[in-house]
Length: 358
Image (cartoon, rainbow, N blue to C red; front, side, top):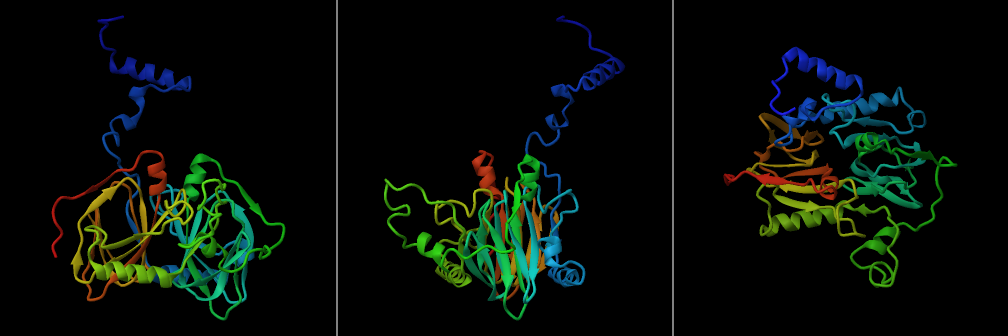
């Protein structure tokens, strides 16, 4: 067959259609050979969700959606370019329980995290029999297949951000879910059980002896008081500040010393007042929440001005740079799918060479 003349366009089209009719595909017919093949090209754009809209919608939902009907009164940050999720692998959203309300107990395949944005410690989440009080700034993890429910025995609403890998679970078609046989699970562990077992001082039977079996995955709470002290301590020291992210901390899994959860990474950072940071890009998506302050993030060719309570998404492999033009520090909480990218061997990151001005 060597040396045969090239087919006409009509003949080629007919051949290609015949291939499709057999439910086959030729490599030359795959658009990704030329589009998004040399480097990643996100199918979605950056977007910002304002806290005023989020907060208003949560309280409007109270008049229409009881928590027992929706199972959760959750408002997701839906990226307009996607069918599901804030990014292709992640969803971030806000959830609220009013004083006296309870959200029933269930479990699911997804890893999930809860970052408290309004709470005085009267509301709580219970994970596998341990109660975690929800105070503003606390981060509470829910490893996959953990029983969890939410209760507010206080006098004011409790609001938190839920981060989960729902779109990833849908993509892999591995979603399992199960309601508890009772509306709420029994408390089988003392308050503080996980911090005593997995904190910086821990029993020798937990990771301290070679002959001990690994501990089961457990939920964990990162109290804001400890996070804030570490963040300000790093910022004031100045020796380990990041050129792109300022004072930047990972929420490390206390069992593994790895990412927060196998599929979700969580970070907290402080941007110094009157400071512009260098641009970088990476193969994981990141979703930010403005915990304190105000500033600007340039994502690709778009400028996003943000303030306390806002959330925004940075698509994978997109140049982005933060700037704090105010007189006060700004604090950003974020979730990402970096653990997934690293596990698959897909992680890559680049920093622009130009130095950020002081």
